Image (cartoon, rainbow, N blue to C red; front, side):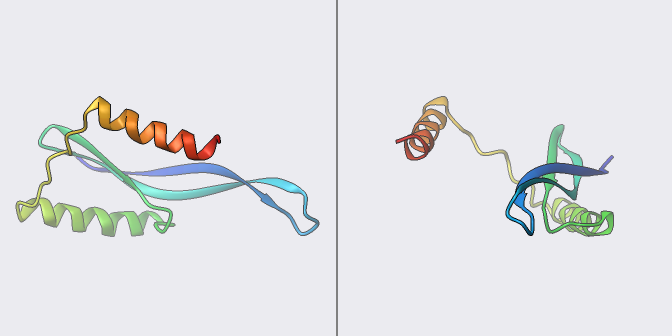
Length: 92
């Protein structure tokens, strides 16, 4: 069974006087089980539960048509290379 869930996060933005303020943002997403695997999708463009329901309906149509992508196989070596490259850029 799929569920629609609200996802919130905060971001620091400057107010009209240039002072940092914490802003709470919200978006909706869905939580779905496909072949025993959990699939969670969130998108900042989905501002209402109706938007998430539309995306969920599209995904369910794909599943019914047989387009169920297996999870991509990742190796620890690949993950470590990406992480090392990320931190090398961020922390010179």
